[in-house]
Amino acid sequence: MQQQRRRIGILTGGGDCPGLNAVIRAATRSAIYLGYKVVGIRRGFEGLADPVQTMPLTIANTYNILNQGGTILGSTNKGRFSVKVGTNQLRELDPALVAMVRRNLEELEIDGLICIGGDGSLTIAWQLFRAGLPIVGVPKTIDNDLRGTAFTFGFDSAVACAANALDRLHTTAASHERVMVLEVMGRHTGWIALHAGLAGGGDVILIPEIDWTFENVCAKILARQRMGRRFTLIVVAEGARLPDGGLVTADASSADRQVRLGGIGQVVAEEVGRRLDVETRCVVLGHLQRGGEPTYFDRCLSTQYGAHAVRLIEEQKFGQMVSYDPPDMTSVSIEAAIERLHTVDPNGAGVQAARAMAVSFGDTPDYQNPFPNSQIKQETYAEQFNVSPSAIGVSHFDDYE
Ligand code: F6P
Image (cartoon, rainbow, N blue to C red):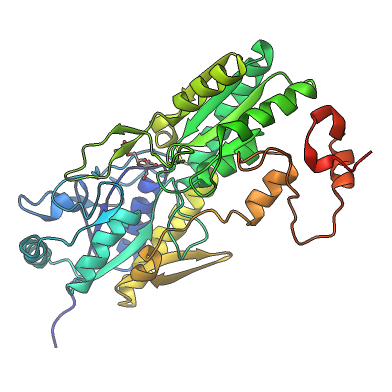
């Protein structure tokens, strides 16, 4: 009988995010506990192609990295392995590259590879698994847009950063009676914008999943002014489409990577300022959301993900991605996780709760009944918020008086 080699490889692919090191640490420690040797693959999947780039992972060199941002292995979201390019076009890996990876994994004597990544990296992982390589996945992305798990790690840390930014913008916006626009990440989905808006008290939230217009955004600002609130906080996801359907990009070149989004916040700020003659400012939070230490929730989630990924290898459950199904840790096929994106449900609990807080998504000119299936009276809603329908001048409350 062939002797089991018991060597695990770990790589981090795509954009970095808080919690990567916590996963590396947890997977390394639990693998060593089970008697494996652990090899770190450097610079994402690139480290698996010639020239191979690896480092041993030990208890000693993964010590004290639980709360460290970034990844000690390095990562990349472009290059030879990019299978998601442009605005989400899918490519197949070059068969010669797959053969090279197969040979290198053999030479490294790796019999289980943990791929920590988001939609793009797990699509690469799936293609390698389909080619017969022993792969398990761990769901990483601040965007939270992977299916098959309650949360990806990194998301909570990004939301904490964006909500903290809103707290800070609140006081300066109020002092100067300005409209503040906060642009947050979220390439295809509005999870960060929605959760940061809920946690940080945003007044308008613009996300890719809900079509919006400048008229409706301006109506909300005016309604707030009539109520005596002379400032407004707008949170916009970088991937929210303009009313004409266009995406705002910072760099459209996309030969071996996805287009870089960015700039919609400034467009919103300028247009609102022009239409209402109010002072506006835009803050682009950018990579601050990806840097720094993970929240305690992300540390805990990452640790469970790392330990469970080793368990999947031990049980030879290749082609699976660890999945958080609160309170349990389980797994789903990588294919199911990447089949389509996990987007914000426009009628889901988060959006309904936001609407109940009188948040506008820019899709209607007035307050919308947040609970479409309930018997709640608009009058009750208006009273709760101490809103006089005539004061805000919106048709929704016309029969209130
Ligand atoms: O996918 C995670 C993400 O942070 C997106 O939200 C964002 O569009 C992209 O990565 C930014 O990538 P880069 O680091 O290449 O600018």
